[in-house]
Length: 327
Picture 1: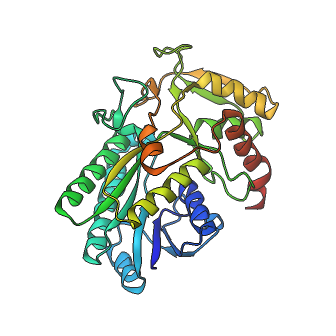
Picture 2: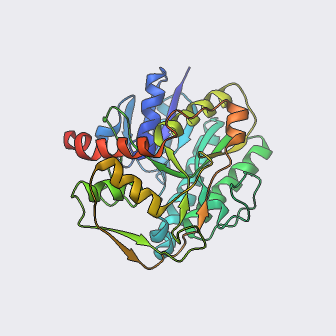
Picture 3: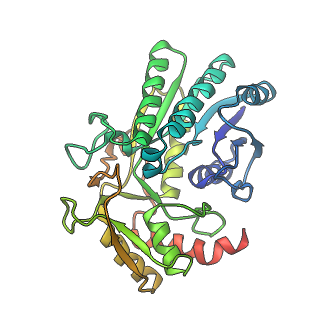
């Protein structure tokens, strides 16, 4: 069997998927420009430093290695930044994906797992949201993910690509053994912000908006542990390698927590009453996003193992206070 090419495999989610792939014995090739990823996060396989927009570099890699399938994580992911710098997001997330897909098609690679997002739904009409809900992104980040999904859908129709698009809800936590976790200094994920503030790495943290139409006025999100998300990727890969048809799956637990509930859970998990301040809403934030992941469970047999908010926060806390010191 050939290699599994993992673009963005040195990043937060990509590195956890690489860990899961390695533990299952897959032959892995990580392709990452290390703009937000880290060499220390790649626990298995070989690392090639390169950019998905660099067609020449992609051709070098695809000429040299036999690739059976691709997992594509290489994207910019910060919603407020996408509102301020849309071109950066379209150039990399859409332009880079098109360059990658063209290279793969010309090298006969036809199995593709795409790191998509619940941001494609915008403000859903129904919660929890199903995969069949209309795609109506409200920020450039979500638009870039929807655009690439559309390209994949059209390629699948043309017979040139079989794909699985996994729409992530809010990914959090870290390797329970503390070997890898969120490595970006400017990470904006809520749970990361909470534990870093609790650890004294930040003076305070902000809650953006307390006037949303939710139970306590703060945004509600579905938090999925990164290890459970990694398992969804393994199942998607096995499905494609067995010639499964192209599919889209939500990745979440189907239960939402408000920002204030997460803050309180983080204070409990860390034992630190860290400072929090209220701030104005951020552009591009929907009030609530909660997944209906029944399709992932019924089609691929996915069964969450880390579906507990305290546990998710505890693994993130362990990484920030013990794991990161070994970087």
